[in-house]
Every structure is written in structure tokens, then in C-alpha cells.
Image (tube, rainbow over all chains, first blue to last red):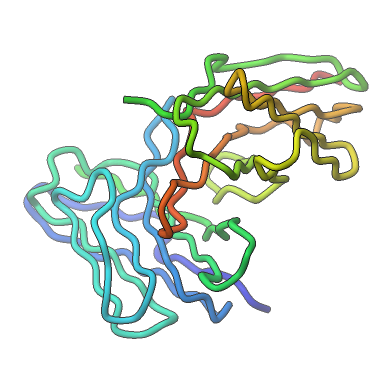
Length: 114
Length: 113
């Protein structure tokens, strides 16, 4: 089945540690996105990539880094520079060449900093 | 500055009645809008969308209305069912060719049996 997978579902991190969240899609979508959700807030864009080997900062990129070495993979690293990393992280993808604008989301990763 | 706003954090309706979820936006350049439904600890799922060339789009029990002059859109669910209980997000596609979505804060809908 085509879709987006994120792993792990739950992640615990000690302060000062970097951690990498996985996002894989087999939809053959060109564009991929990382969002963060906090309680009572909408989804906020961290980074996005429209093509392999290229990515752009979103609205809240500080303390995060990404790579896009393969079309199907877009991992997100939460670094120790991120001041408040505890949140629900969502990865999405979109067929960039399609006239449809909807993004398809993965199931999310809940990151908790201890 | 919040470009997409959902001013009602929560809404409670009786099963079988209509649910109306509202969304306002500030940027007149937005020309495509989407509604997503989200259950706790899951990713959002796409519900329905509307282009600015239309003022209404319908898909089964879900209808989205767009009022461009008021910069307002609404999602109507008729009839509401208990399984519709979730958080609903309104989103606008950012102007420019990035496909970025700008989300509202979400409205939690509770449909009571």
C-alpha cells in the first residue's frame, strides 16, 4: 500500500541530545514537509523540500536540520539548540506536479524531552 | 501574525444535527483552501478543498463554503455523527509555488449521541 511512514511513534530524549525522526514515503511524491504541532496550536512548518538534494526553511526552522538524499526519505534532526522540542511531529508529502494541493500526512512522532 | 484563524477552539453538537466550523484568513492572495480532520496521536487526513474560483464544494455530508469578500470559509457537516468527533484544521495554500500550507489553530468538534 502507498503511504507515509514515520518512526518511531514515541521518542524520549535527554536534554542536550540530538535525535533524528524518520519519514519515508512510497507515493512517488516530489515534495515533502515537516510540521510541528503543539497543544492548542495549528501545524507549523519546520522545513520543506520540493526536490531531491534541495530543501528550504519553514517558519520555525531554528534548532532543526534536514536532508533529502533520496526522493522517498526526508529525515528531521532535532538538535540540542532547539529550546522547546517536546511536541508532536508530522511529516507530509505532495505530488508537486499535480494540480491538487492536498498534502498527505504520516501518523506522527511524539517527542518528549526528559 | 496568524494568517489563518479558527476562532472557536471547540464545538459541541447533537448527533444528526448540522456542525458548522468557521475559518477566517487575512491574505487576499490565498486562492486554495483545505480542511483536514485529525484524531489524537494521528496524522491529519484530508477532507475537502475549495478553489477561490468557486464559492461552494460538496462531498457527501461535507460542504465547504467560501466567501472571498469576507475572507471567510466554513465547513458544514450534515448530519453529524459521533465518528466525526475530532479536531478540524482549516489550511490555506501559500501564495508562491511552494505548496506550503498555512494552518489555523484547529477546532475540536464533539458530536454527542
